[in-house]
Length: 273
Picture 1 (cartoon, one colour):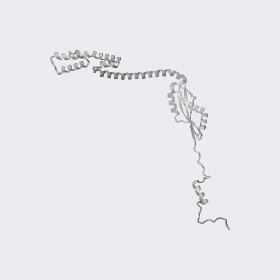
Picture 2: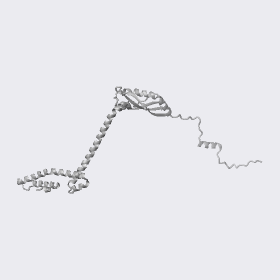
Picture 3: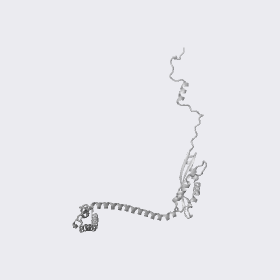
């Protein structure tokens, strides 16, 4: 008698068979092919900026003074890390300084000791676009320079620049004063002209301060001192036409009207004949 339970052939298990399970698993997680080679690592490029504090001395025109060149190197290397490039740059620093001096000494001798700025422009124009070493796969550098004069030249130039700065500052200050004086004069001129025709001006001026009242009083007095001559000329013109017997013509009437108007504006009505 068999002890194994009978299975119903019409009932199938829900689990896939072994080959099917393997194919399903590989569809989700494909097997790695041990024969596929990984791509080679990309080339590494490093760059390093080196600002050297120690200046390079080159002679100026006449060889009595030196220019001080402050070099700033930019190192570039392929297939190396930043630390490796920096280590090599430190080792090659003396060689790089020699290259810079060789490239600049002849040009420096063409410039006077106090023309450091002009030399700086000329040197950077010459060094621009160049690299050392010029060929090969070794690390290379490019360079820019700052140029300063000899310390003895700086001391000679100091009094000159102090005087020049003072002159330019004084000149600018005088221009500011002139602009302010011109503006103030124009404003006061407008004020006086506007107040002159007002009959209460002499009294109202005191309200603005004693200084303005005094200035305005003098202004009116001076203006009135110049009026009598003109008034007398107008009177003589009117009298002259009357003496000739011309009568009250349009000409004499116009002169008389102008005379009376001018006298009234300047407070001279009491002088009218």
